[in-house]
Amino acid sequence: GQIDEANETLSVDLFKGFSFTATTENEVAIKQKNKKISRKPIIKRKKKINKIEMKFTISIIAITSLPMKYSNRSFFISWKHHDVQKKNVVDPTKFALIGNTLPLPCKNRNIDFTVTNNNNNNNNDDNKKSNNNVFEFEYIFYQDTKNYQFEERLITFTLKEKLDLSDNSNEGKRDRIPLGSITVDTSQYAKHDSEETKIFSLILSDDYSDNVDNSFSLGPTLTIRIKCEWTLFNSKQILKPQLDNISKTQQSIAGELLHLNGKEYFLCP
Image 1 (cartoon, rainbow, N blue to C red):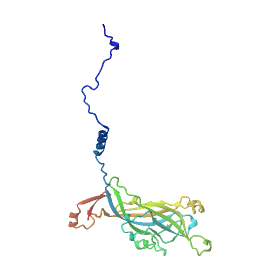
Image 2 (image 1 turned 45 degrees about the vertical axis):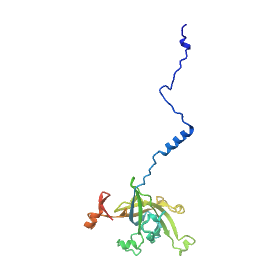
Image 3 (image 1 turned 180 degrees about the vertical axis):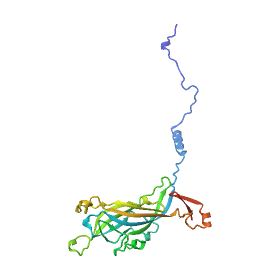
Image 4 (image 1 turned 45 degrees about the horizontal axis):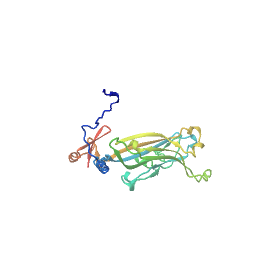
């Protein structure tokens, strides 16, 4: 007889050439456990941080563009640091969180805080400090070496009117009325050996802006000068090779150069 090829069933050994060893469930579990243990641990690297001590000197220069209705009335500027922590201050015992200038009259829509009450026009440093319009503070900044950015360090400046409560027209009023304020981030000016004069538009206070004429709608401006000097970089002094009197011993100890704003500085213990 002939073979019916269409109906013929062929037996194929799919595992020919392979050998298998039976594995129990316990053995599988042990192998999985060992596989987890054999993974390499993840190493977290610490961020490299520069610790920089800085000295700021801020001079309050002037208020401009007040309405004419405020002529011959007295105003002052108050200032306040925000969220200051001890670790961010060089000497907490000498750090003033708040302060203010002395009250001065508005003349021709402007207030010049560099002139004393006795109209002395001598603009030397002693004269400026007599108005309490110059203040200093020392911060510690921590700089991430990846992006070289600093964290925010905020100061709010507020323009306030000083009312004479002996005047019957001011009866029942507060003796200090805020007109407007501006918050400045000092980290934006944290450059070594730098000095910048900036003009800021004040944001009007809600309870006072409705009582002023249209000339006040744009808001007065505050002019301040911000000076910054780095004093220590990772606990080392910052010295200028050309200008500072650096001994040969200091030069040999230094061994490091710091490049800031296109200039070279020695780092000395």
